[in-house]
Image (cartoon, rainbow, N blue to C red):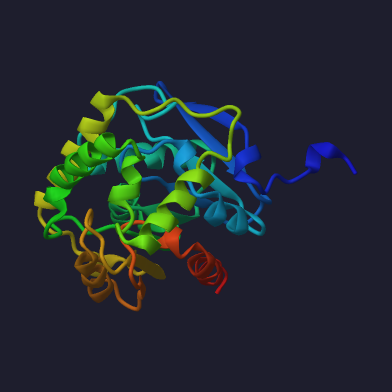
Length: 284
């Protein structure tokens, strides 16, 4: 067998590549078989390429072409972080079109889900299917409180010397703590060619963009006609769970799954249940 055609289906082994568009070098990783509609992964607040759970990406990449990328000014992608979600969506569009795709599926988590909504509202022809996890709509009640919650939990995490995601993404009961520990360990599985960490300035600019999104005029989500799968935990302290229910009501025929006894990172805590459901949704 010609090794050049070996398909990488493990995110840990996917090499980091770059593509340049409008003076910005976008860092990305791709895996899975090419040829079908690619699944583009939109990552969360303060995250880089190293923040995707391999237990979600790897199973999807068995049968799908998967691409994860750093938005402008994040991780190894050059340029400065935009201070609006809409500008981030414009950058994502530039990146996707530069790679030559005119039809994609979207897998978006948290801040990534906000960017994905802005993208699909502006370029509906680009998106075939939409997975929105742990996210909320423009003008969503409580989104502008994300910064306060984030800073509070980062302080708590610093005092207890744990990863802030253990506070932000998971409940602080026994089940949540075990799920948090397992998730953080999975993120360490990749040891080579790791991404550059986000800068404090970039992180603050992202928070500013989220606050602006939360305070902006609600978008008309009824114009989203793509099949949409919405997922969250039942106790999301970052982007309130009620906003997932709100999006579900406003996006016709959308599918909603709320996982019990879990927080913002419900899809990671319930990866064994969520990932097959996501694959079935993409394939249906």
